[in-house]
Every structure is written in C-alpha cells, then in structure tokens.
Image (cartoon, rainbow, N blue to C red; front, side):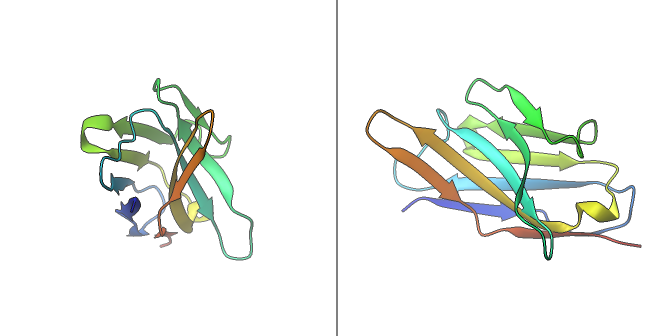
Length: 121
C-alpha cells in the first residue's frame, strides 16, 4: 500500500515562509521515475496546480506562485518539498501532493491527504 503523507502546514503571517514535505512510503515504492505535483484547494474553489517537478527535475509553476515557491525532490528519501516564501492571504488553502507515472500498461497515481496552510495576520 503506497502512502503519501504531507507535513509542514500551519498558520503564518503574510510575508512569512513555510516548507511543506510529502513523504512517500510503501513496499518497494520509489518516486524516482515519477512526476511530482503540488496542488491546492481553497474554500469554495476548484483544486489548482501549484508546481510540478519531473523525474528529470524540470520544474513548472503556476503564475500566481512564480518567484515565491520552489519545488524540489529527494529521491533517496522518497520525499518532495514545497518551499513557500513571501506568503500571501490568497495562498491559504489545503495543499495536496501527488505522484504519478504512466507506463505502457498502467497508470500510477497517488495522493496525499492534504495539509492546511493559512496565511493571516
């Protein structure tokens, strides 16, 4: 059974920083070949993509977080990260991590349970 577990969320003042982690576990499971994604969902809004990192470490970000957020991965630790700087109230949301990989015969798609980030003074 594969599990993704997020941590690092919390309450932070505007302009502050948080680092989210997403640790993957499971028998013989590795994130090595997987694309990793952070999503977020604010109350009353649809889930939106925040940042992605490919197996080759190429990154992409939503326009709303460019220059403020960084995504990274540590394959040896089976963990992905989202460094969030200069946080704004509009970054308030539940943040979810996702790992996915498509082979010839199967789609692998795993989600974490989410971690709350609240940006407020």
